[in-house]
Image 1 (cartoon, rainbow, N blue to C red):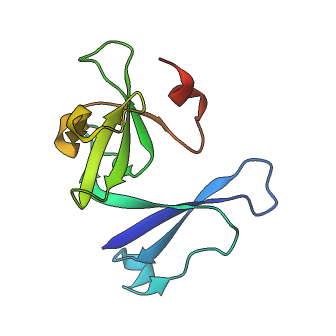
Image 2 (image 1 turned 45 degrees about the vertical axis):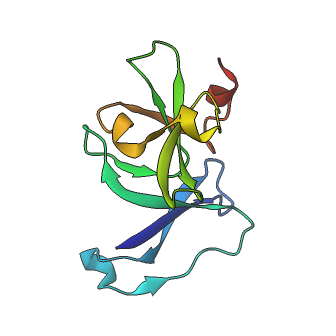
Length: 121
């Protein structure tokens, strides 16, 4: 399954996520759906779920219980060609972590709906 989500306003006061890609979900019967042409970025499903069973996407944010007030963000790292976690916006490779580091943590938001979480340090 290759799946993405994209912010979708559709004239509604509260935006929602639009899911697209090659979905294997029964109701789509394996068809490919296109992204919306609305100028909004798409966020990839990384193929993993957290301990609560919630799908994890690029841009999801986690509060780290290991380091009190730190916020971790899932991103795609071109250098390692894989998904990694940056803490409090850190981009230096040796200060980022493999995705398995946050699988037991709780998703608290994402960069699109909760940008204020990234500003906290």
